[in-house]
Image 1 (cartoon, rainbow, N blue to C red):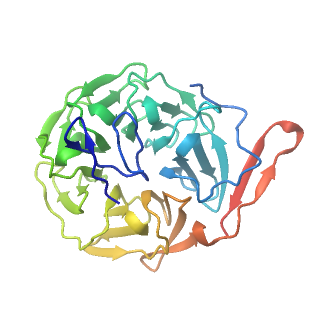
Image 2: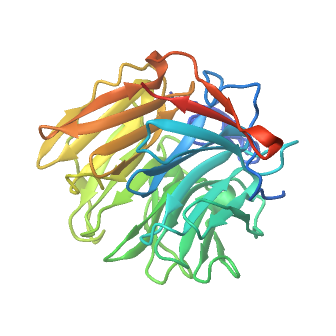
Amino acid sequence: MRCWARRNGNRPAYSLKAAVVSAAAALCFGSSFITAPRVAAAESPVVGQWDSLFGVAFSSPGNAFIVGAKGTLLESHDDGKTWKRRLLGDPVAPYDLFSVRFGPDGSTAWIVGEAGTIFRTRDGGETWEKIQSPVKDSLFKVAVMGSDAACAVGANGSLLCTQNSGSSWSINHYLDFTFFDVAFSSKSGAWAVGDYKTVISSADNGKHWQLQSGGKRIFTEPPNFAVAFDSSGDGVIATLGPAFQQTNNGGQSWQSLPVDEKKQVYAAVANQGAAASGFWFAGGEGLLVDISNGRVSKVATRVAADISDVTFSRDTGIAVGLGGTLIRLRRADDQWRVATNQMRISPTKRIVVSRGREVGSKMKLE
């Protein structure tokens, strides 16, 4: 869905409720940390149609994490077959969590969200520590380069990068543009995309940023909403519209990527599954598109809700989105298919751990 509104007098705002919600940036699509005990509500199921799920990532084969509205953190340790719900943040007034990403070591990960919220784990998601944020602007995406290095981007031009696990930050602002996604290229460093088809890059881990394209307040120009690079340095950019670009040289030059698609695209990821080449796009009305080996293939998800993120590990994929959308994909015979569609399963099951040590909910995807 696209939203056209006015902010700052005559500036249009674009966003996706399934991916980002920010009062500060007037985006119109619709502080404590908790380590132990893990907090979950016994009265509610793990995920329901009122839940908004924004980000998903695998830490290692079999272990996946999902973040969403009001501090929602779901975790699975059996390749997405069952999920446990936790609350991350202030239980009285939890902030929305928009993005989760793990580093190459599988132990270090970052979560970012509303009002500058930042969490970090060093033990594969067993415990999460709240990191003091240098900004109050909502952070919509995070990218992790290594065990100590990460970048986050968001509203009001916020560009944050750390090389020492959050002890200090390189803080930059590009005007008051909203940046919707950030990614690392092995060939050229960090890349961020946002308002008015803006693309910027940093060759020094976020200390300095250079404008690559866009950067002007041309109100008819939609935002670049997603960027991704694979391990070889090839990359893609998705623009609301939609429109697509690709690079085969680490971003030195970009060309149009011919994808015949009319639905909006809100996320792009490199395929880290069994066929670790190519990219995936996710977006409006259950859109999932696999681009690999010169082919463009759509996956029939059988959901109408917007998909905000997707991730892969070996032969398993997990996609999440609005309306409690949680889809499990499996790869067989060189094709990805929906193995479980959460919108079609029976109501979630609840498990209460005895002796008062933990109250949890667990959902089984049958």
